[in-house]
Length: 145
Image (cartoon, rainbow, N blue to C red; front, side):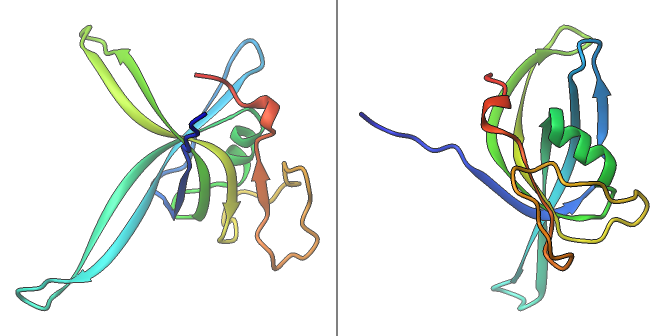
């Protein structure tokens, strides 16, 4: 029996406030982008350079509600999840494919600036206020794609 792993870990900053959609059936989804950067010295010039990559993240149900309450543009965040490919047709009828990180865990690493903090959505609560709050999607709540 062969096993496989689909695990993505991002540590970066939010590029925008989360977009949150609430559905008639009670479902909720949040989408946001996370920027990750790496620095290096140019081999020819010795000049310090930085490359930034943008990652699309989606969070469902409880994690979407957490994202709506505590995440703001510029916040430093740790995201752990799975990479998923999704296809759709745009307004012109053209087929499009996107890759998204489906969040399973969120850790806010910077203090919320505008939105008030809320009780953590997690299986175990953190007691020490100096420790980042960890928000996890329950294993049986994860949607299959």
